[in-house]
Length: 307
Ligand SMILES: C[S@@+](CC[C@H](N)C(=O)[O-])C[C@H]1O[C@@H](n2cnc3c(N)ncnc32)[C@H](O)[C@@H]1O
Image 1 (tube, rainbow, N blue to C red):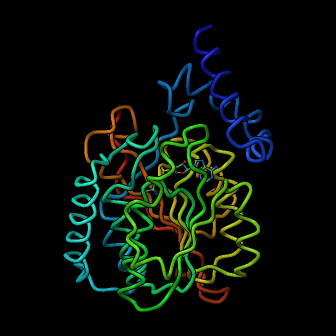
Image 2: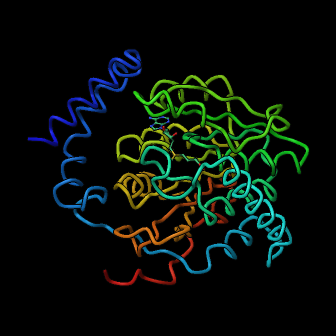
Image 3: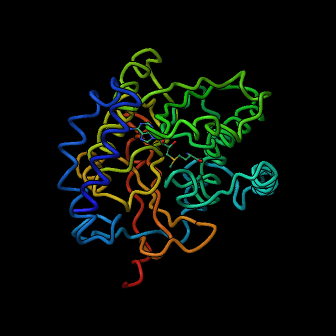
């Protein structure tokens, strides 16, 4: 009883805070009810039910570099580690604690996913990058620093700040310094509202990063549209794919996609997630019809430990 009253209050705050977004996302609110209920009643509050753990790779990083035809060990690894320490130090000095759930329940980008993104941008040298989900902007910062180091490329970031919590909105993009804004466009609003129009405007994209609402319906929506806009050999990155069944559905819909499933590296154990870490996915579009065999899915090497 008490929890449904809490939910009703939250819905009321969201409606009052941004009626347009509320109405656009109303179908999601209704259609995602069974998923949310299963998570709440059987999945410990946040894991999908029934459980469908992924087979994650231990050597995803090396395989990624092989796919990118980049040297391994990565010569840009030290630069990433320095950048990571710098970002964390800057946020700490501003008294913005980072980690899973640190931003109104949303998690900040962690070192595994952001290192993958850094290497993708440095080695792939994309011109057009789109991401969803900014929060304090750790992935945005990493992408923008890598684009600046490349001297080419721009980032578009779609983000709906936590509705009904205006006090947090000034923290959006806090990790991105002014000097990087030249290559950045922040697109405020839900991906449901903004993504299709942005992709239409851009025509094609080289890299897409999903880190917004982690529901099956939303993940399928974002990946489905981004996949159609990807240039041959372009990449999708999807964070937290263990939090819903959407990525399983994407794989079934796109057997041509070459996927690396990777264990996240949360700053502290993410208890209850797959292997207490969580999983992110890297997906490459075929290079072209003729060379699609280059992008065949990489066979898994390790099954997750039983929970
Ligand atoms: C997991 S956080 C993003 C973390 C960020 N990538 C980083 O590295 O620090 C998710 C963000 O997506 C926003 N968000 C939630 N639902 C969204 C939606 N439907 N569309 C776009 N953004 C959304 C949240 O308010 C939050 O700012």
